[in-house]
Length: 301
Image 1 (cartoon, one colour):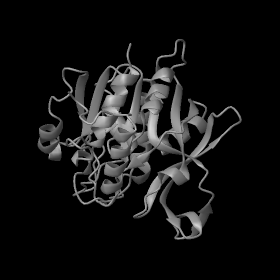
Image 2 (cartoon, one colour):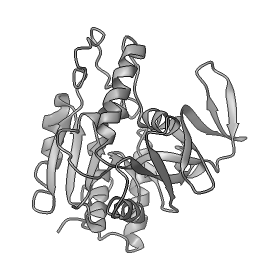
Image 3 (cartoon, one colour):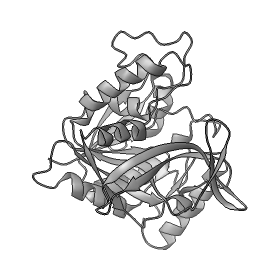
Image 4 (cartoon, one colour):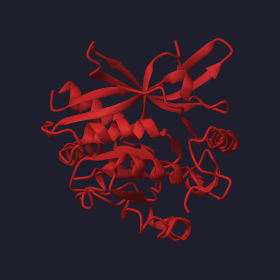
């Protein structure tokens, strides 16, 4: 069975100032999702699932539509605030999605085999997709054996503001021992730092392994996420801006011994679009990759 690629595209893009997932970065109107799908198909993925929200479905469909229908099977899942709540009542007026862990959970009905997860607004590189597909297609893999592509922290930061990063600690065999979501990570004149929830500043080396939300999962993760999300709602569901992130759910799984996560390092170039000015950087990087012969100038046809 060919693996599935799950693309998380339900974020509001509030820091960016618009629906950043469908802004062009390529010379013929290509968006970052185009390059991810191009690389995924080349790596052997056989199905693409988009997680979006009903509120911008029309705009998303107008841009994506049936573009890939003849190339690969596609499906949609919807991360609305009332999805997968199992009787829990969301705070009145909440509009913000429940986080990336919830985004994966809502796709459980349209995925029935091994799958990878990526962010819609991040570029990961062709080799990263090949490495992920190689892990997902291995024979005799435990149902609770997962993987994560690990990037170097300093290579993933924006020049224009703070970002969230899952900072990893691994054992000598590169199995994940701990992953902690740091929400305010940024470059400074003195190096890299993050600000904790109490406002305290912590310095980092910049060489830390981080998750950029390129995960390789087995279908067993949906049951784990359902349990994690239920516990999350009990603890923090009353908070208007609370979110369950994939790193939080994975950290809980590995510490409880219910799953293992192999960290697969990559030297691939990474870039993303968090802030409006990041789009110009992404456009320049794509142009360089085309000049290097990594991509054709016209990606599709």
